[in-house]
Every structure is written in structure tokens, then in C-alpha cells.
Image 1 (spheres, rainbow, N blue to C red):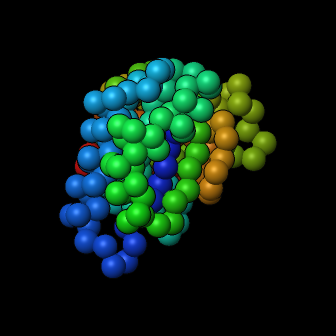
Image 2: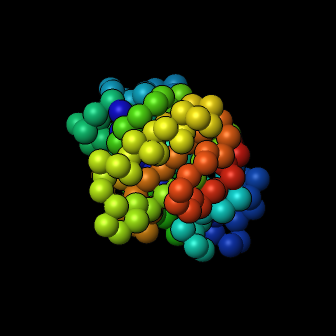
Image 3: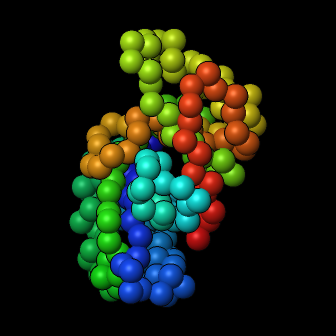
Length: 179
């Protein structure tokens, strides 16, 4: 499973409640008319962005495979989702994105805890990734996702868990709250 993440925020003059309402409407439009190979989507309001000074809204778009990304890209801006997309897009600013591959666990929706980790320079993936999986499992289960493509300053790994995992590396916790 792949997750396209999109970080954004309302333009300064936009009322946040109006923004959230339009954001919810767009995700409902996707759920009501899902494109092929689309799994799910959800939006979060963050206490902190995955990187310093980043936007505080995070959308997750889950798809089955690589071809589904192109399908989602086209379908999101076409009827019957077009009006809902355009309504939220007209209010948003500071967009950034990243594409992540689910490497371990399950991704059923927002997790109570989310953190972002950068692999230390020189640390082999062969030892680093198993430690991430073990830490997430010990924290009540969740998921480990690894960045595949970067479309902004997003960190390399996303960790989702029932509670904060014990990690030997720093993680930037984002404090996710479902919108």
C-alpha cells in the first residue's frame, strides 16, 4: 500500500472552521465516489508539522499500488469530486507532499501517535528498519512507512502507533487529531 501525504494550511484570511468543513467535504466526495484502487483518505490537524515551521494539516490518501496514484491524481479533480476539490484548494496554501510505502503493520486510519524519524547517517537500513518495526509493535502496534518520493521537506520515515514508541533516535511527534 502507498500513502500520498499532502501537508497544507488555510490562507491567513480564511476561517479555520470553514476550511475544515470544506476539507471534510472533499474527503467525503472521495469516499462517495472512490476511483479504482483507492483505499481510503483522512485528514489530520497537527500540533506540530513533521518539519520545523511546516503546515499543520496533513491529508493521507491511501492507494493499492503505483498506477493508482495516477488514477487518483486525475480523479480527484474530475466530477463528481471536482467541486469539493476546488472548494478546498482555493482556500489552501503552503502545500507540500510526499509518497510513502507501507513497510510494516497496518494502516487503517489515523493513529493516536505519529512521529517522523530520519535514519542516522551511516546507520545501515538492515539494522535500522527492524528496530523501527520492533518499537512500533512494542508501542501497541501501528505502521512503519518509508518515503519513496519527496515533494517537499518531509522526513524519511513515518511511524504510527497506539502510543509513543521507545526509539534510540529522535522522533518528531506531530500530535495528530482527526479532522
